Image 1 (cartoon, rainbow, N blue to C red):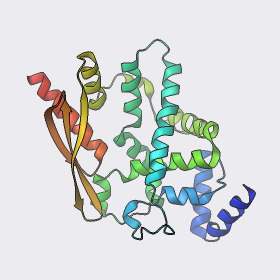
Image 2 (cartoon, rainbow, N blue to C red):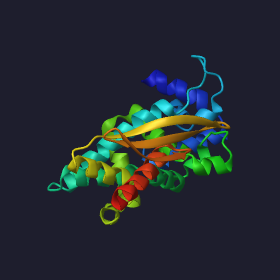
Image 3 (tube, rainbow, N blue to C red):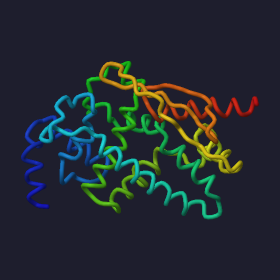
Length: 245
């Protein structure tokens, strides 16, 4: 661990910008990073990774995968304790409201992720993509790999949830269409699937075409730079279609 910490600082702590980055991590999380490379990786969007060789820099996609799981687990445990008498549907819907793509994007910008995110996307592409929300999840993954579960949990609950997420207000809002559709399908004992019909190239980015399938019947389709947004919108259109029907 000591050697890893030394090599990490040797590689990244020499420039003024890296010192500012390390200071920002300390202020944001409450912890001085041990492995700064993880945090650099968390801010490396796939659009800037051109060389796919084993020795090439790695994008934040793997850390995003990990951070998504860790964030979901910590929020789930928090809500499980906070609402001891609420059922699975309530907890699932509330967790989805907290960790949905738009909320994570807003949190990422509030915390200043846009200052450090490395991407070749244009301003318009970044606005339409999930790059900021993905970086937020990747950052959670980096904190977890660097500091472990307990410190990551403390960071999420004390630095994010406590000051930046009004859980009580979210209880009274109902904009998570995926959770609404999931609850509808559970109550009616039907299967629900979000089928990825196509991934279209749009410059350095991708457009995801998603369709809702219920009991093998095709419903609404929506496309977006963010797969999560496409799923949410397809769910919203499907709910409207079901109500009309």
